[in-house]
Image (cartoon, rainbow, N blue to C red; front, top):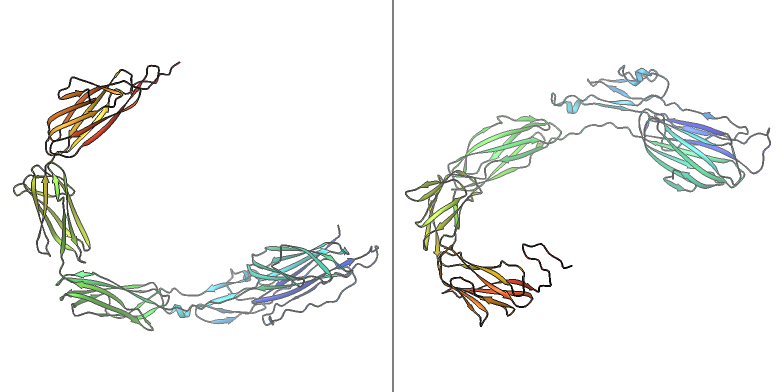
Length: 613
């Protein structure tokens, strides 16, 4: 393996931008060179601009002439120049540093520990800003001090020689030799004209006219980045690689420009009654970052209000950033109408936007909505709702709601507690207050035991409103409501066996049902069989069964049963029809029975299935 040559190039910068150049040559061999002959030249050219007064608009020009002897590994470091700066103490005194001895800073600083030699560390930023809460002039007297020196080194490694048309690698190692992070470095590699570019690792940011450009960012202290370039010499001439590096660094000092900003807010009621006192709260807040001096509040009161007093601001005041001032203003509503209160605040070279508040002066009014069934049946629950709505923007106090229950009606359920007067049959609900733009709802259930018109009287009043009366009318009717149900109690049956059916007739209405008749129609595959039941008649000609009852009272149930013999296998449907006197309504219900032969297995409702062997 051929020996390697290492070259190190270091740059030290105290300015915003530094450019350095370095070059390295590799001799391309086309034939064997005997021992004892002079080795080819390896050339290194370096340049760095490190002076504060240097012209950074143009990069330094590389210098040097080729040599005819093999050079050993070279490492050169360009030390940074001293950095000029000023020390600004807390009292505003300025003193210049001595370049030969280093800056006169605190003993625990890095310069005090290493006054000479080595790489000087970055000067730390010193903030002498005073506590703004103790002195408003601190915004003007605050001082900053910033100084730093970034340092970058470049080391180039390559073979001493390479054959013509043979691949060779050149390694460039960049290192941050400083004590702080380097923000951005632009590194260029100019390839020899007669060399064929093969590859580069990592891939360059850009490649144009034989120049490889890398943009490196955020290099921490002692951090390295390595670049390997592979080329093939096309002529028997030295390979001359030239590099260029720019450290893009920045220094800044911040002069805080502050601005006070006043924000005005007004809180208060939206509606009051005539003669009521009202209080408005005005908040003045400095949301800026500067001191607001001599802030004062001004207000405009309409004729409908009379100013009473103000608390919280007797004289103009200074507001620091984030500080606020609360002012309360009391007034009396004397005339009705929609009024507007305007407020503004201003100080020295600062003013707040106008803030206003709308206020309605009026007499409060309650709205009542009562809802109940227009028609109901005897002994049937009816739901009644009473809604008291305060649609105004002020509270109403001492609200009372009374409900007079008519005779024949009984309240069974209420949703909120009430007081019952047994003598007058009156329910009363009390509310200490109903807030503005809110409502209270009362719900109850009641049943009537007698038919006819039932009238509920509702009375609503409050401390601020007049008493109002409302009525709810419900027509109570009585009627029969019949239903029928039929069930097969036998399940599947064999041919020739009886299936038993039960029929139930229920009156869910409030009146007795007269002349109730149930007709059971059987298909030809079933044969009706008489059963010992009162009122049950079997008609063999029509294959039907009839049941008759003179009356079914409200809430009562009437039941009977009948038998049917299966004469053919299959699924057979039985239909029952219910009618009552005085009603054109006919209720039909159906049920089925399965009839099977003896050589078939069927499952009864209460049996486990049996399968033939």
